[in-house]
Length: 182
Picture 1 (spheres, helix red, strand yellow):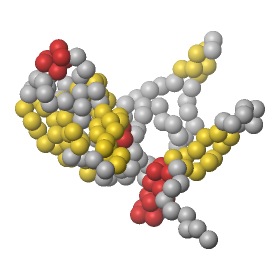
Picture 2 (picture 1 turned 180 degrees about the vertical axis):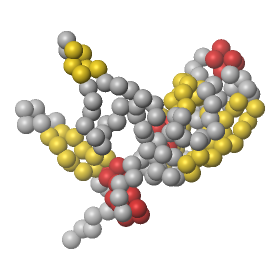
Picture 3 (picture 1 turned 60 degrees about the vertical axis):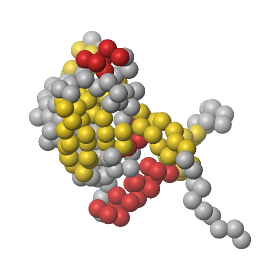
């Protein structure tokens, strides 16, 4: 009898009856994160989410304007006002969790002996829990600054799972809903 090793890619959770050979899986990394969150915290605390939106600095002119030549990094285009991160709009994030961020918004991930693959910096957050400290190095007006902040779950302006029924009005096919940031 063979022992099953860590070769699982994911958990099958849905398929389409009308389609042939189409199905969806939850990646193993996501399923394990969910289970580990329950083990550690007794509840699903959600994934740690970056408290900023970014813009890639793919042109030389942009890197020059933000004084990030030869540094890599992405421009902070918006900051979550609900998280005390210390980040400011127009900061350039050059390092997260000790990993260098390229001007294309990608980070190197090891895939084998001495080999690496470049993937979106979102990858750095996919296994982090709410409350995980994030060490961040930014350039602010060309000066390097080190920041540390705790990751929080995403808090969109319109909640995906509202705790109370939504207030809305439908007029001529338009759905009108009050939006607040607080």
